[in-house]
Amino acid sequence: MEKTILLTGASSGIGNSIAKILAQKDFFVYAIVRKVEDKKAFENFDNIKVFLADITKEEDITKLKQEIYSQNNKITGIINNAGVAFTSINEYPEIDDLKAQFEINTFAPLRIVKEFLPLMDEGKIINISSVSSNVVYPFISPYCASKKALDIFFQALDIELNNPKIKIVSIKPSVVQTPIWQKSYMKAQQRFEKLPFNIREKYSKRFKKLLEKSEANIKHGLKPEEVAKLVLKILNSQKPKSSYCIGFGSYIGVFINKLSPELQIKIAKILSK
Image 1 (cartoon, rainbow, N blue to C red):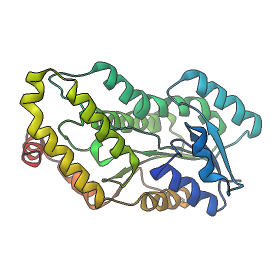
Image 2 (image 1 turned 45 degrees about the vertical axis):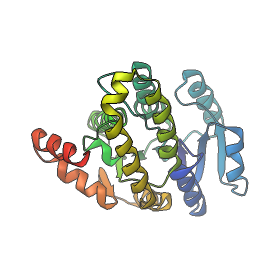
Image 3 (image 1 turned 90 degrees about the horizontal axis):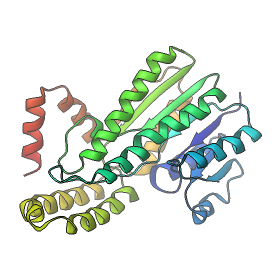
């Protein structure tokens, strides 16, 4: 069977690395990007077909479905990689931002699977989740919650399908050196400056410290290629696990998740000081 993969979020970072490493290993990749200029990165790859689409828009998904169905009646894998990270002061939440976070990280993968699962007789659905789905981090709860919801929805899908030929896998990396975080921090600063003065005054020191610690962590984070290699390993595996950790922080997250809620919150408070 030809190894044909549908990949979201191929513009940069993890998705870009996944597309290239799969193409080099004789997979055919339908790579979804949002901007015309993002196509240039794949010009030298005959087995990468790039599509422009905003996967949060129903009309774009419908158009994408029509184009791919016209070219291929079978795929062997779906990789839900596209994602963003929003911050939030939960005492003063921006509800529209929370909705946007879930639209991209949670609902879009569900839409993709709804439309393209009929093309899979067998194969793998791989979600790029996060260590954040296992732990509580202050000020980035929208991201944590969206990844946790992603995992829960697809765990349920696995149970409901009850199809041993289709394996659903969650990858939970620790911090990765990817543009998602730089973009997130820039927008976080902009959002924070728009908050009422009393809210900014109350959270300013802790919020600033969190961003500084996070930026420092990114410099020592995983390279996108490391996650891409794990994706390749999973796609080639006959019996992959349902969940994979990658990076030291990811294993710590699993350990913390096994503790009581009280201990989880205590640890989160200590780490955020």
